[in-house]
Image 1 (cartoon, rainbow, N blue to C red):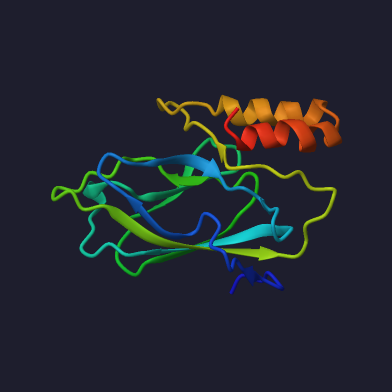
Image 2: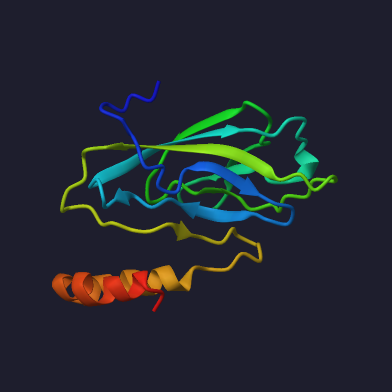
Length: 173
């Protein structure tokens, strides 16, 4: 179906599994992390399966896909029960559910997220965490912390970054 050879499911569900977004919740447009460092695998594919019975577009939480340069929304999917969305992931595959969930009975938006990898990671690729990008003309906020970390990773010698800055970031500094 995907044409991607050698897909490997994530046995640890790192970031995957059941996702629950309550009323008022949303997930800004983003590109997913691209490297599973524990397994040293490249993230390639997401599968989302929606678990919301009788969900209507007016309840919010629709899944949006944006073009690579973030100039327009390409598609939007209402998270209806048993609907599956499958898409390639990369550093410019922008997606999310930026419209807040607003179910009249307070029910949450729920989905099952499954991530797939390939053993194609190598030293020529740059690892990154989830990257957030504001939609044009919206009140979305730019992700300055991620950008700052990318700049540090570019200018600090790799051994210093791995041994000093990386551990501090994991501790919340």
